[in-house]
Image (cartoon, rainbow, N blue to C red; front, side, top):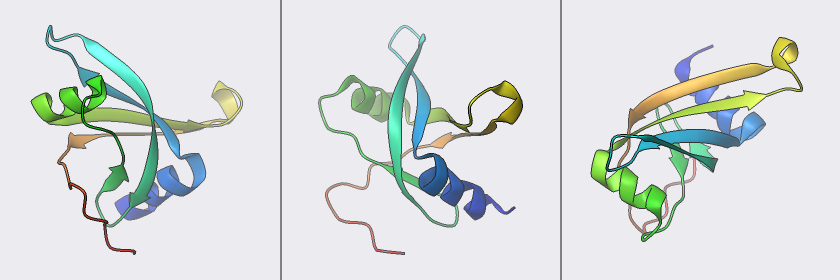
Length: 96
């Protein structure tokens, strides 16, 4: 599989991911976030200004996530991604 296929799998087959950011003390914080779209090399998700998650993303600029699908350890598939985040603003992203 190519990277874009893994990203599409996360969005279309798994959807809800567990993301990790870092707080002001350098401690990890996790949250469940729905991945809304993907393209060749990016995942897209929503959050709102004023939330702790949004504030941590703006301050640190990075996150890590794991998406997992399955009933138990032996029959599950997991995809982990980490990278830089950036705010797109209020503009709607183009439909792929």
